[in-house]
Amino acid sequence: MKGRAFLIDDFRCPRCGKLLDASSHMDAEDAAPDAGDFSVCIGCASVLVFNDRFTVRKPTDAELAIALADKDVCRARQMIERMMGIKCD
Ligand SMILES: [Zn+2]
Image (cartoon, rainbow, N blue to C red; front, side):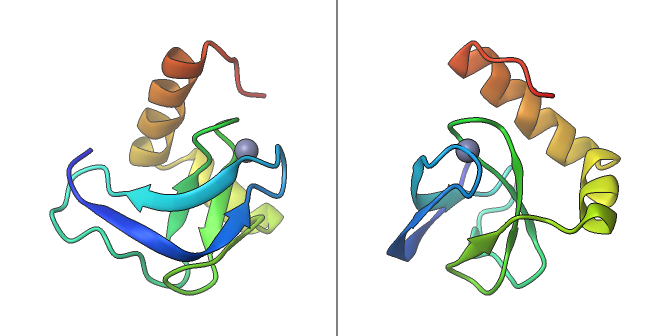
């Protein structure tokens, strides 16, 4: 992961409670996220969605289906699984 954007406020993963204080883009140098971009929690590999550039929420069912079919999201989840020694559902 190359670029990094720091979240302004302290946000926690809505699933595992992990503090999320920064985000990293999988490929691009410009790492600042836009509303609707997917994110993956570093603590539990859950798919999250940016509300704006610096807050996240759980995805809707439709968003989750799209995210799980996205090869970059899958690649990020697999990397986190390996790093954290967890298995996503
Ligand atoms: Zn999490």
